[in-house]
Image (cartoon, rainbow over all chains, first blue to last red; front, side, top):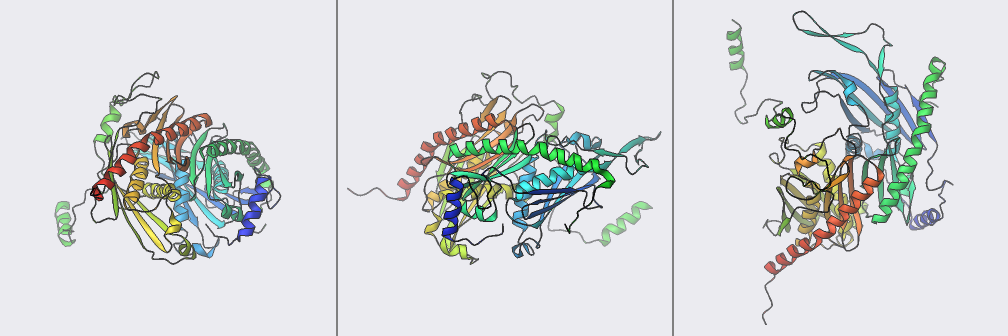
Length: 291
Length: 289
C-alpha cells in the first residue's frame, strides 16, 4: 500500500484522539467517510460501478462470458476476480510493483465469495457440464487513500447489481446437436440476486481501541487490522488478520462484534440507493469521471 | 487420404523429447468415484456424541497427536519436521543473510521472507509446480502469523528465509506449517518473543471438528453454518498473530471456534517444548561433571 511518512508526535496525537473517540477529521470510531457510488459507467461491460470513499477511487467492471463449468462443480457457473493496481494510484505501482497488492486483494475476494450463499452460482448454469456463464469481475484502483477492501466490496456489490446477462436458450435438433439461441431483444436480460453479497469492513487496532474506515495516516499508526466480511443477515463469510502485529483474543472478539454491527448497517442504505438510482432510468444525470 | 496427410504433418513438426507431458487437462479418476457413489465415506452428522472417522470426538478440543523433530536438514541453519495424522511437512530456515533490497525500512529491522509450497503429489489433485494463487495466499498468511513472534529489530539489514514444504496434505496444512516454521526458527537460533503455534478447525453445522483431515475439510456445502478457521497463537503472551476463516458462519459460531482453536494451541505447547528440549540435548553435549 502507498506509504505515508509520519513523525512520532503525529502518531501519538492520532492515538490519543482515538482513545477519546475523536479522529483527526472529526469522525467517531465507527463512522465511514463520505461515499459516492455510481453504476453503469462503462458501456462495454455487462455491469460496472464506481465508488469514491474519501479520496479512494475504485472502478469495477463485470463481463459475462460463456465458458465450460469446472469439472468438480458441473451445475454451477464461475466467478473470477482480478485486481489491477494502476500506476495512477501511486508511482510505487508502476510496472509490476502493484502485483503483490493486487494478488492479495484478489485472493481475499475469492475467500469472501467462496461459499454457497453469497451468489447463487446455479443460476449461471446454461447446460450442465457443457456451458455456463463465467463472470469476470475486474477491479481497477484509480486512487489509493486507505481502506481499499471496503470500497472494493461495495463497488463489487453495486456492479453485480447492475449486471445484465443476456437470456439464452438451449435448442436441441432432431439429430441431437445442441444450439444456443440468443433472444433478439437486447434488453431481455437476467439479473443477479445480490441480497446476500457480503461487504468487507476493515477494523484497524490503534492503541486500545479500533477504528472503522482508517485513512492512510491512521493505518500507519496501527500494527494490526482485522478484515470482516458481513452479509445483510449478519453472518460472517470471512475473517482475516492483516498486518505485522498481534492481537489480544478479547480485542479480536470486540472487533468482530463491531464489524458485524457496522457491516450489517451498511447493506440497507446501499440497496436503497442502488434501487433509487436504477428507478431514475434514462432521466438520470450521469456524473462520470469529471464530477 | 486424411491419415496420410496427418502423418506427414507429424513428421515435419519437431518432437519435444525432453519432457513427457500428459494432456492439457487431466484429472485423476479417483476424484469422481466418490461423487458418483454419493460419498459414503463421510461421517453422517446427526448427534454430538457421534465419533469422527478416526475416533476423535466432535465438538471437543481433540487434536491429532503430533510428532515433531528438529534438525533434519543438515545444510539449513535450522529445520523441523512435523507429522500429524497423515499430514507431513518439513520446514527449513536460512539466515540471517544480507538483504538484497536496501529500503529505508530494512535499515532498522530485519525482514522475514516466507515460502509455502505444496509438493505436486501432496494433495488428492495434482498441483502444478508453478506457484498458484492459493499458495501465495497461504504464504502471506504464514508470514503475517510468524512476524509478531520474531524479534526482527535484532537483525537489521538482514533477511531470514523460511521455506515450508508440504509433503502430504491431509488437512490443516497452514496450521501445522506455522508450528513447523516456528520450531525451525527456534532450532536456527533466531531470537523470538514466543513460539507461534497454529490450530485449525472445521465448523460442520452445530459442532466443530478440531484439526480436520482432508476429507473433513471438504464438507457438504448445502447445510448451514459450514466453514474453516485457522488461528495462530503466541501461547505465553496469549496473543493471536494470525486468523483466517472461510465459509458463511454466524458471529457466535466464529467466536466459539476461535476460543476452541486458542485452547487447541495451548494444548500443543508442551509437545512443541519437548521437541525443542530434545533437539538442544542432542546438539549440546551434557556438561562433564
